[in-house]
Length: 152
Image (tube, rainbow, N blue to C red):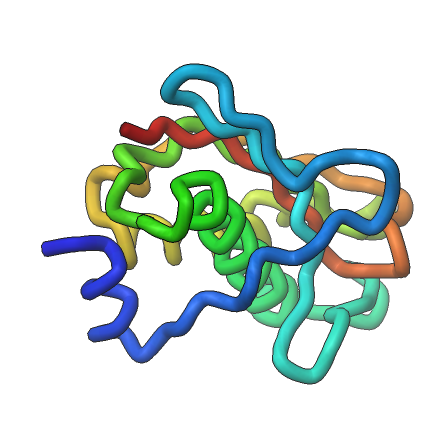
């Protein structure tokens, strides 16, 4: 089954690929690899802000990470000239969690993105990953995730 059809069956429509907020490009395609710049947590009601371990719980952070995954896929679709089915696999994610020094569950937060990719893409969604804490993130968002993808 195509990835686009699978997303449709899940009731998910990808957002438009977010425009960069500064002097960088949203993705770089070199050969069969796409490097996607960090995508920040942004839902239908706007930016998802907060600090894990202070004013956000793990479940809320995981939901924020899932929105990052949607934006990452939107960028991949743009890199593939609108054809998401050119995606072969998710290679690696690096997730940044806006969290207190005492917060220790960054991996559980980034699972929101990882679980989504496996649910939506099956084995092609399985990837290498890092999940790290950040004292703050741009615009006060809860999560930012960058990714590396293999395409055809």
